[in-house]
Amino acid sequence: MTDPTAPGPLAAIAALMADPARARMLAALMGGEALTAGELARVAGVTAATASGHLARLSEGGLVLVHAQGRHRYHRLASEQVAAAIETLGGLAAEIAPARSWKHGETARQARLCWNHLAGRLGVTLHERLTGEGLLRPVPGGWDAVPEARARLSATGVDLDRADAAPRFACDCMDWSERRPHLAGGLGREIASAWIARGWLRRLPAAGEGDILARRRVELTPAGRRGLKDAIGLETA
Amino acid sequence: MTDPTAPGPLAAIAALMADPARARMLAALMGGEALTAGELARVAGVTAATASGHLARLSEGGLVLVHAQGRHRYHRLASEQVAAAIETLGGLAAEIAPARSWKHGETARQARLCWNHLAGRLGVTLHERLTGEGLLRPVPGGWDAVPEARARLSATGVDLDRADAAPRFACDCMDWSERRPHLAGGLGREIASAWIARGWLRRLPAAGEGDILARRRVELTPAGRRGLKDAIGLETA
DNA sequence: CGAATGCTTCGGCCTGGGCCGAAGCGCATC
DNA sequence: GATGCGCTTCGGCCCAGGCCGAAGCATTCG
Image 1 (cartoon, protein in one colour):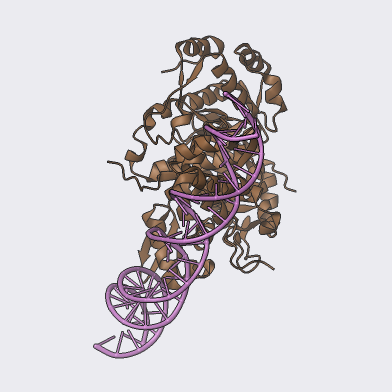
Image 2 (tube, rainbow over the protein chains, first blue to last red):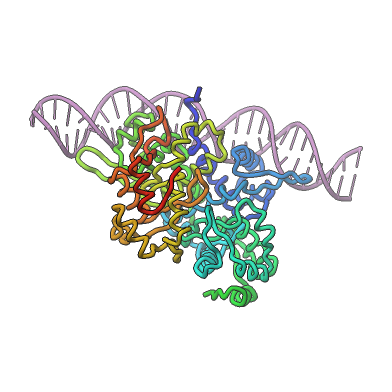
C-alpha cells in the first residue's frame, strides 16, 4: 500500500529547499514579488535550462505558484505557510551557521519584507506597539483590531476592507532576527503594501553579488518615520 | 573569500532534514525524550552504521545535541528553534502532501508533544484560554502571567520558578495542525512535564510501524480533564 | 513572414551521498 | 582479563539528481 521508498512528507519538503540554487530562488521570492524564470535563474547562478528544472520541481511540490503571461512565466511563493517555513528555517540557519554567512544581514535586521508583510526590528516593534497598547486584542487564532486601531491605520492608507477579506485578518509570524513575532495575515500584507505605496517604506538594492536577502531589504524613509510617529506614536531608533 | 560551492545556510539546514532516515529521527526526537543511537536507528529503519553517520551529521550541523552516558549516546533536539523549524516544516508538508501521509494524524491532532511542550487542539485551546481570559498578558517577545494565573497554574503542579529561569518565560510556537499558536517557552515546558508527572497527560503508543508521530502522541486522562476544568475552567471536548 | 526572446525538454556527464558488512573501540559486566 | 554490547569508522557499491549545451516550442516584434 504505502511505497516503502517514499521519502516521507517532511523530507520531501525539506529536499525542495535543500539545493543551493533552489534555496536562492526561494530566498529571492521572499521579497514578495513575482519573478520570471530568467530572473530566478540569474539569482540562482545557473543556466536557464537548470533553473527550469528547479522551478518545475518547486511548483510541482507546491512551494511556488506559476502564472504565465505572454512569453514570461512569473513565479511566486504559494502561501503564507511556505513563507513562514522559509523564514523559520532561515532563522535556524542564522543561529547555527557562522555569522559570516550573514555579514550583510545588519541592514536587513532593521527592516525587511517577509513575503508580503513587514519583518525585522521595525516589524517586531510595530507588533509590540499594537499589541502592547491594546490596539490589537487576542482572538482565537490571531488578533483583532479595536475601532481606534482601525481608524488610525486607515488614516495611514491601509485598506482594512482588503485586510478583512483575507483568510486571516492578523496573525503572528516568527521573526528570525528578533526571535519575536511580527504581524502577518491580511493586515500585515495591507500595511506593507500601503506604506510602500505611500513612500514610507522603500525597497533597497542588493548589498552585493549573491546577496541572499537582496529582494527583501527595505528601509523606513524620513516621511515614514514622521508618519509612524504621528499616526500610532511609534518612535523608531 | 567566500567559497563559491558553499551551499548557503538555508540549503545546508534543509539538507539535514531532507533525507528520509534523518527526517524520521528528527520526528522521533520531537517527542522530547533523549534517545539512543540504537533507538534512532530503529525508528529510521537503517542499520546502526548508517544511523551513526546520520547522527554525526545532525549533531555537527547543530540540530541535535549528544550526551554520552556509559556505552549509550543519547541524542536530543538542540533547541526550541530546531523544534519550531521541524514543526513548521511538518505543517507545510501536511498542507501540501496528500492526506494519506497523515492518516494516523487524527489522534495526534487532539494532543501531542512539540519537543518539550504541549501541542494539538489541547495545546491551542489552552493558549486561547489563557490569553483570552487575560491570564497571560502580551509583553515584548512573548507573554507574562498575571498573579492569578501563577497561583492557578502553581496549584496544578507547575513549577513556576523553573519556568521563570528559562530564557523565555512564555512565547508562541505555531501549531501545524491547528494553524494557531500554542504555548512554548519555560512555562510551556513546565506545564507539559508537570501534567505528565501528575498523570493528567499520558504518552500513547505508536499507531503503527513507521508512525512518524509515534513518540509525540499523548492523551488527556479523565483526571486531567477534571483537573483542567477545576483549575482553569478549561472545558475539553 | 522571418527573427529574436523566454522557456522547456532531451541526452549525457559526473559527483555527492546513502546504504551496507566487517572490523575496531570503549564501556560495563562477570 | 574475557566476553558482550553499543556505537563508530572504513571501504566499496550504487544511484538520485544537479549541471550543461543543443535542440525544440511558443510568443512577440519587426
